[in-house]
Image 1 (tube, rainbow, N blue to C red):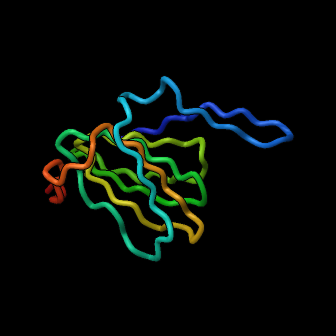
Image 2 (cartoon, helix red, strand yellow):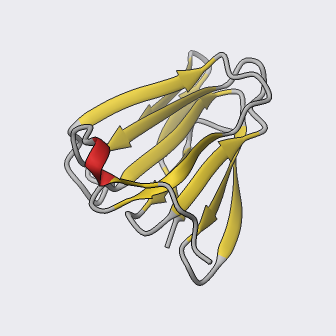
Length: 121
């Protein structure tokens, strides 16, 4: 099931530093980011193997998730929030603010055969 992690953040008068270390349940093999999104919906898939960590490092977006048993919406509106998406989590991203940058860390290299586009019934 998808779940949120709070990333360790250090803040002082100089600004903030957020750390991703020893918290992800996988080794990072791929990194990508999504930005400049209009009112489109992104995603609409799940995976056979890939686990993902999604962080909206600027702006905000909503990730809607269905793991086959439960549907849930997650608002990513700060760089200290990290959403873990398991392979069974059919998800889509929407309601991006104009300045949104969604960073995604993945456990696997890109493989088109790993994608499942059909939602649960």
